[in-house]
Image (cartoon, rainbow, N blue to C red):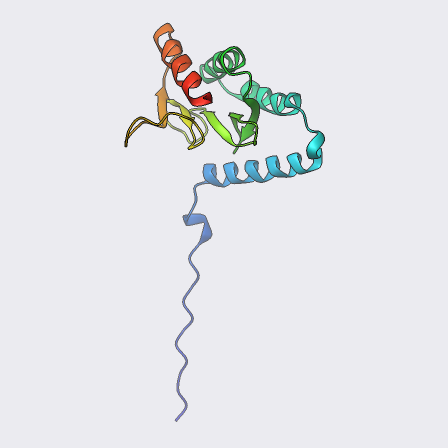
Length: 156
């Protein structure tokens, strides 16, 4: 008597694993890597800054104004960090090209606030627990003061 082979399990839909926004961010990251490879070792800080400024220009208000304010602050407080994009977001990297901090527009993942985030390369360690991302709803003098302190510390 012939035995029936069990029916093959249907593969899970890849689209269910990631949102459209997440897929777009991954595509942007791949494009950033390709552009960096094309530029090669002769790439300059200006190349990364041009990419970053293009992303900021494409943002809707009020996110654009906050990103512009952050960029001006980064140039003044941490000029040693190189401007670039990271997953399609404005970001700032150390000498080894590792992202230290980034700005995520509220439109990026359709959230109600922008995010100022810091990677593990940021020097923000405080004991056994510290924040690495901050919600930003508006650029106020108080927010700017706090961001300045965070950036100074993160840049080391």
